[in-house]
Amino acid sequence: MKFEQHLALITIPSWSKYYLNYKHLKQVLYANASVSGEEFQVQFEREITKVNQHYCEQEESAQAQLDSLQAQWHADMEAGDKEVWKAKFTQLLQQLEHLADYTQACVTGCRKILKKADKVSGQTVSRTLGPMVASLRFAKPEANEELLREARAEWRKCIAVPALTAPTGPTVQQIVPEIATVTELDLAGFPAGQVSRVWVALAEDALGLPIRVPVIVARGATAGPVVGITAALHGEELNGIPVIHQLIGDVDLSTLHGTLVAVPVVNVPGFHLSQRGYADGADLNRVMPGKADGSSPEVYAYNLIHRITRHFEYHLDLHTASRGRVNSLYVRADLTDPRTARMARLQNPQIIVHNAGPGGSLRGASMQRGIAAICVEIGDPSRFQKYYSKNALLGITNILSQLRMVPDEQCVSKFTPVICSHSFWIYTRSGGILTVHPELATWVRAGEVIASVHSVFGDLVEEYFAPQDGVIVGKNIDPVCRSGNRILHLGIVGDSLPGVLNNGHL
Image (cartoon, rainbow, N blue to C red; front, side, top):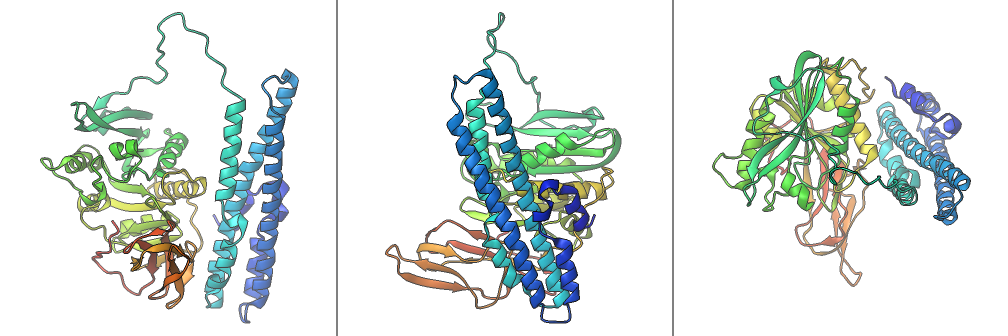
């Protein structure tokens, strides 16, 4: 489906004139392809100004409405007044949901038309206009997400769930059916046409109790490939969890050919502690495939592979940035392998980074077993981001469609993402207060200032420059900086794909 058609399907009718006019910008672009492109820039700036103005007006209106509804509420309201209040608040929540979808559509439209402009003009138009978009409020979805969270919290506070009538029988009610614990995943033992849930024990804690991971198995009505999806291998990287929940909730088992095996939380001890590493701090993505008689994290890793992931034929490992950093929506994959190269492109990320899947990683362990595996980086840690999750889910559905597991039509971008032959992190030499200047998924030129470090007294200590042309894959947002801290992750577009990369990315 072309983006123009996709945009037409998701447009909110009452806001249609405020969306980025992608079709008009494309016409202007082709009409001015042989000249300097000044007319395109003028029209583009006019469009993003229109989008931003509408966004700001809607955000201001929603904030005022929320303040007003908060002031109106009191516990002793008449029943009729309460119903009116609830109706108005429901409209407010819908407005904020619409605003989130609107900004996502317009930001995507900007990214796509700027890529087209680069291709048509033969110039790097996006390097000039991309930062202009990034500076506008509508391109920063965090503000809208925060307002939506505040509104939902207010709704939960005011519209409390009525207390349950005291039971006459036992005081403990079983809300969720008991889920069995197993030590081996037997896919053939799960019923076809159903979603099954089990706990798989991978190790024991200090009380001798099993450390279990949750596994969801969706077996289709007919046989087909086995696709595994893992999330939260690092305990603070959470965006993959709602992606799995939504995927399992949406799948039609009557038309599913094959089996989906999803592990919403791989690193259960790290998840409990809200930390990246295992219980002892070890990085599970550095000890794969583990050892049966090794350290605690090595035993956990070994059993993960031998009890769960060895059953996969295709594997998507969902990650986010680590604490203190942010990521674009990007994929790491071995682009010399036709299977994983195709999976990476179908995922529709902003950026694809070639990486052969080195030893120590879960992806690398799957590849060594002949399982086609990619790593999908979905935004930022310790939070759920609807914008990134929706796009990641769309990409997973594309892969399932290409494997003929689901009948859905693939929604593939007309323009491919930025494909990097390799990437690397740039590190600080000095300590102090760090400021990283470029925005995610934007381009920098060799010699461009990318970061600065100031002393605690406010004096400039050092500036850092891009060593070569590249695209910003991820960056540090923690201003507290020591010597050797990461600055940004720079993706390089090269002419060849190296077979082995030792760049720290797994």
